[in-house]
Amino acid sequence: MKENELFDVLLLIARPAAGKSEIIDYLKRQPPEARLQRFHVGSFFEIDDFPMLWAWFEEDALLEQMGHPRLHTDSDGYFLQNYLWDVLIERIGLEYQKKLRDFLPAAKAFTTIIEFSRGAEHGGYRSAFAHLSRQILEKAAVLYVDVSWEESLRKNRKRFNPGKPDSILEHSLPDAKLERLYKQIDWEQFSQPDPHYLTTSGLQVPYMVFDNADDVTTWRSEALGTRLEKTLQDLWKLYK
Image (cartoon, rainbow, N blue to C red):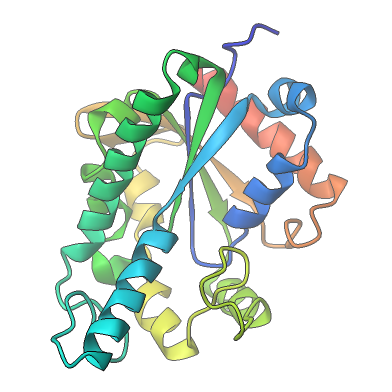
C-alpha cells in the first residue's frame, strides 16, 4: 500500500458518548503499518472542539470570580449566543490551517481526525458543515457513529469522572443539559438525500455509518477493530 493511500481528513461525528473518542483511542494503539493497511489512517493529529469549549467554561468561571461579566456562557453553562456553536466550527478550520502550516510538506503522510457533536437545538450538522472550510470538505470523509438517544444518555452517565471534567474520555453532561442539547439531532434529515454522500457547500462528501448500538467501543476489543475496518474500507471505496 502506498504511503498516501490514507484519508486526508476523517470527520468523526455522533451524539455525545457515542464512541468517537474511544475509536480514536483504539486507532492510537494500533501499529502504524497495520493502522494504514486496515483503516487507511496514517500518523494522525486530532482536532476536537471540546477542549475549545471547555476553555470557554473555565474562562467564564474565572471572569465571574473576578467580578466581570461572563463572555460565552451563562451560569448554567449554556451559550449566551447560539452562533458560538458555529464559531467552534470556524475554530476547527483555523486549527486545521495551522496544522498544515506546521506539518508541511509531511502533511501528505498524515490523517487529520476531526471530532464533534451537534444537536438540532443549536443548528445541527447542517449548520456545522456549512461552517467547515472548503479546504477541509474537499479532502474529507465522514464516519457517523450511530447510537440512540438512550444509549448516549447511558454512556454519558457511565463515563462521568467528577475529578476530571475536562478529560476527553471522561467528561460528561448533566442529564437535563444532554437532553436539551442533543436529544434531537438532524443527522437523518441531513444524510437522507443520498445513502453515500452529504451535499454541503456545493460539494459531495462521502460518508458511512458505524453502528454502535451494541457498544463495541468501550472495551476497544477486536470486535471494534473488525467493524471499524469493514466500515472504513467501505468508506475508502467512496473516498478514493
